[in-house]
Image (cartoon, rainbow, N blue to C red; front, side, top):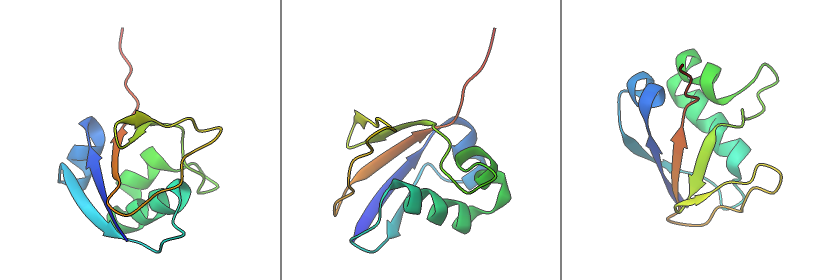
Length: 91
């Protein structure tokens, strides 16, 4: 199935694109998608989306414009649009 991933802020800069499509198995979930994203873009992206155990960091993420509850992440479906916002800090 095809999943569109949109990036903002640091992720947009580190991937070099604002969005891209991933072709994944129908059983793909968010952790597997985050691993695929890190695999495609390497360490600069991996350090934002995965922790040391390759578990997704709980970044702000939306599936089809609905915010992800990391306690019960949704199943992905064909044509899903994932938006990932990297951590923001400031003062």
